Length: 531
Image 1 (cartoon, rainbow, N blue to C red):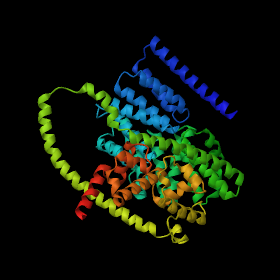
Image 2: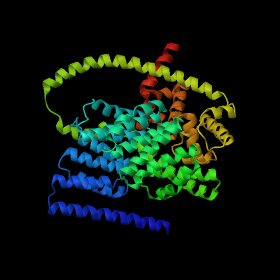
Image 3: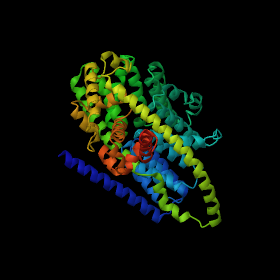
Image 4: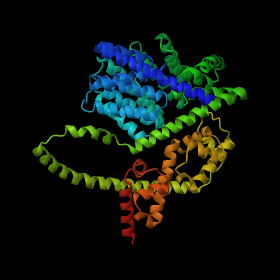
């Protein structure tokens, strides 16, 4: 019955989407629209982003199809991507952003190109591809030279950029920098003009201070975000972010009267919000709350909801991460770039001469730099292996890892760490079918506990943790079994558990700093010198 209802809902959603698109298309055929009318449609779709993201997706698709200019098309695609991210459709969002990037690739000063890079950077961060996230934010930062205070769009974009930079710094555990990067005076100055952007920044400051264990400051900014949202009349779904931050800060500080008043609101919001990550976080908080109250039935209900959402998000992130590893943005752009090539032979000849000269210097520099990367990584790997030989010493070490209140019992945490150590010494991580869920089942725990243990003790998310184990495994094979040096990269990828040659090479370079081919050449050179 549930499957049938879900199927019917899906059919109704697709039917509604088709009807809206049909009406809009008929409308434009009968009455050609002015730019101002399209702008009104865009503003309405933007207003529906948090309350009706599926409607926003439909309208943005229509606007992108009927755009008169690249900038207009890019704007619609960016909005579509934001709505898809809220719903956890990361691959669709990624494709929309890459398409938007291509639409504006020849307009370097475009505001929408900045917005595309900003959204793309945040998506890469969500998927755990931190180097690419940093690269995108760095591109945005270079375009802000301080001379933008008279351009409203760029002011709001700059506030969003500061928020994104702070979130990324938190991901890297640089909590002090995360609080310093956001300009409090700027937020105060523009709070009435850009309440959405400023409220998001206040919420991020609340999170950053909370991660740094400064709960008084966290509560202060969470309340600022909530007050601004209420004062500005922002929709309830958007205010849910601030509501959750306020409840968390009060819960940690044991302000019982205050956080108890938030619980009924959060119970309602848990069902209403459309941001899948926010929904997961609300259920997680409610599970923690009911556990502390000893209400096992409600704890089980919200914890189950949390685990289901967490599994769904992890699965979507894994698929999108695999796509990123296999997909090069330059390949996407190359399809259309061919038609813009010109036949300036003289320019090509002169350019080629300079290129050859530059390549010689660059190659020598890069080889030296990559060899340093190789030596550093081998040294790091040896150090890690020595540390792994030391058994987990006991409860005291676990306690020192974090002063943050933990829900995992200390004994359970110790047992899980020992099981993880045994897992790392085996070969199960090379199984292509391995997921967070399957490993949790194998270790006789749940995905929540396992995810928290990996984040806390390995300082990385689950996908990055497994990828690094696989790379270290194949490096040990290369260094200890010389026959592996003669195998093809595709065989090494298969042996270590990667789905393709491309994904293996990309992850290998992310982990070690150099390509597998160069890494192997350095090992061969060392063997040759030793012999």
